[in-house]
Image (cartoon, rainbow, N blue to C red; front, top):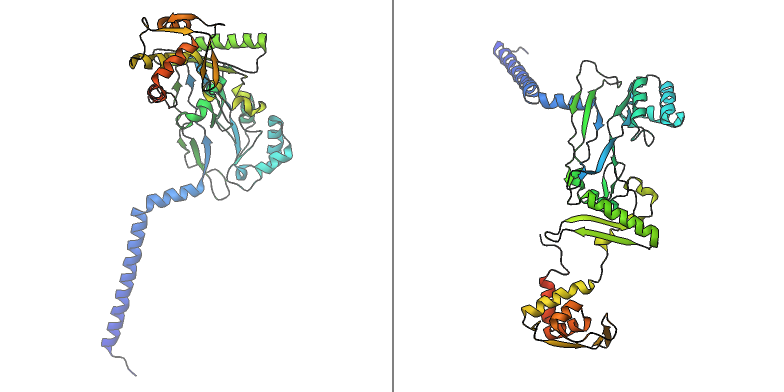
Length: 382
């Protein structure tokens, strides 16, 4: 069967058109990959070659009202290894073990581990600057020393319950350190270097450095001079009387600023692990509830005056030394009572039965209305 020339030409034309279409599709795809996706694919490729050496941020400092450092940081570098870059695992293990005071077998497990990057922990974490210099001087291939820090409390147990403490990863765990952790901790940085398929560092690729973002500093209303006096007096009282516990608070009465706060027993925030949690897990001045005692009388007096239930100079009260309230006997501090007195003298003498009488004149509902109005039982609304 013979095929006509027309049919042959049609078939050749079809093949040609098909080839052109396939070529255009491939060319278009290559152009799209090269010009549109090129940057993204390059970035993905670099990520597969890269190794990140983390750089920890400096945790924000905690300062007193005058800028005195109450919580700060000390340099404490951390050791990392990139196992594929280690040329002589046995030699590297031996030299690192000697500096870090750990067994060669343990170091060997780290330097031969199938991981892109490995942290020597715990012996290689938060080491001294002297040890860091020793390791750098060894110039071991695949061994890196990254900057890190530990929390430092210059005054030891000073203000310990208020400050709280931070853990080994510089995370706030208690007190102000925990409550303001998001502001104090900062953001991590890193040095990114590139390796080939065997883990060897690529000399033609420059390292990428992303600096860490340090945490924010925090200034307190506390005055370290007031706090020092407070701590000293508590120490003297503890040595003399051996109480089960003590608390002290110094406040500016004009604006409520806390100038000093302390309690006993206390602890060293840098060594909280050696202390029973019952010691550090409660800040007694703000954690415990205490009866206000005679200081509450001013609330009852203010309510009685506002409601015109008493005239301090004209009204009189006879104090026989006690008052009966719902079957309970409330005594005056003075045995036998103060006798006949004006209500101004009731206030001057801080006479318990006299204030009981004022409360009864007000009645329960009005008295509680004023108690609530003064903010008792509620969080600070500022």
